[in-house]
Image (cartoon, rainbow, N blue to C red; front, side, top):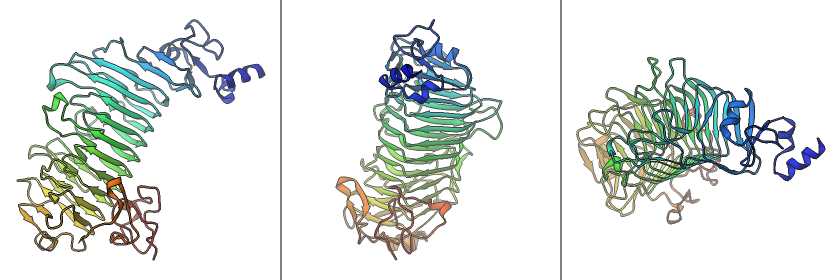
Length: 493
């Protein structure tokens, strides 16, 4: 045993793993072996076939050109210090369950520490996926993986689809519950009409945290409902979720053939989800920073809290709520507080920092900072959508060029804060003043000690504003909460 422990340390494998009698995979192994540290298996799939329920498979560095299906409760992880790669080069994309890593109806599974790459097709009818979780399952953890170059390069632009990661709650037996998607990186994907990281249908209780999503050609993170994914009535919504501390950037559909030159990809999107907290995320250089609505007529995103997020330099808008046309659904009883929006709508589309579209009701927009580009559009309303169903107050407005301020509320446009307040009956405690960021050109949007945003918000409950700002500091420091995503250390009484 002592010799085994010494050998394990030399290989970078912890002594705890050896004592736990785990199973091992190495490119130098053989599937005829017993799967021990000194006599490992060769393929990951063979390990998944043979490992007992509840066991752990530790995979050594190397490139494994295979698709993997998890068949029982288990941990599938990299060996300590190892960098295993599951590579789809030459691996066929089948007509269904087309994932490099598949978990279908199996509970208590952890997938951790892999690079998952190069799963591509030129067949528009196929659906390549990096990691797929589906069926009824509990206790799935996807952590610390890198997923990239998952692509559908088919010629039928209207029908191409792919995913970096997707969880489909599609079983008649129940929901996907206790799903954790943490510390993964997804980049360089071509997903067509589909998204990069998605929970869809009967997914009840999920955490999407600390992930990095960048340089992708469609929606970064998506929480979806009402697509007919779940066969159980009333359970076709991603719900009871927590989306936090993610960084999403360079997200655009402009060169995605499925969008025909339209820049319409969201950094984070709630499309029909419900009861979700979205906090402390950073989004920049997306088409739309964040969108909360439903694409399905008569359906809504509801009960979503969006707080302490930083959204800047997005192409069309910082935040959009409501259906994008009169044939879609809308946004009901959602709360947007203590977010910072800076320099969005870089194409001067007229959408501005905050865009309200069709079918909105009972929403709250407070304690936010909106700093517009030189065109000056702070708030916009989609033509024909009516009076926004939004209560707005205690916000700080500013524009890059003084005198260019514009609020479009319903059918009327206002060029001064006073006229906007009087005409809309909103934002009676809001102000038009420079928020005094530490260094906006350097993307440091913390507040200077003399910032007028300090102590200027309204003290909402902890359940609404949360307990921490974007940096992890206490959300309230002083007599009142600060506006925007950061709480200043100088906010004392």
